[in-house]
Length: 231
Image 1: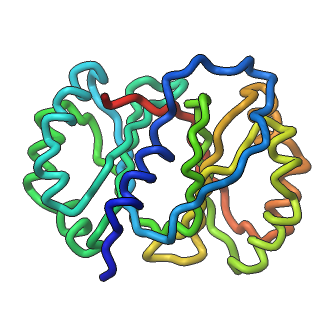
Image 2 (image 1 turned 120 degrees about the vertical axis):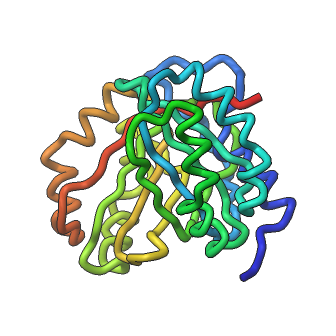
């Protein structure tokens, strides 16, 4: 399997780590920028709850060696906006099978137990087709995962909706991926520039109709979170 180059790994860190500059006012849309997208790559996403985030994070950082041994690079950590005990960890996978083996390993189970993971983790693997690596001040994110009847039909509707309309509703596309196990399961990651507008858009009948017409055939999984600096 083709491995991700050092340059790509470095760029991934930019995409999944928000900078420490002062954020713009919530209602201000980001300035128009040139999108720098990584080549396609594979990734692993882990989602779970922890007993105490402030205790979990140092323990997670101390497990760096086993993460690297599994071919997982530049991990990024997100924390739930409403449920502070919800955690997600994203990492690029240079070897998908090695990452899958690691996800079922005793070493990972032991590390999670030691760090205070309080439930069974949900682990998924992605083929990432688009990843905007440009640096932005916004750290809050919306992740939507849903199943579609036909990806090409859905993608056409997504493109027709357009970046401008989404931006006007406080959402800027940062990443798109498809499940490695089910190609019609799609995940989109958005940066949030206006939380009120973003939540209103997600709940709007207009968006529900767009999704239904595009072939979304089940309830979407919607996750609101914020990236946590690891340095």
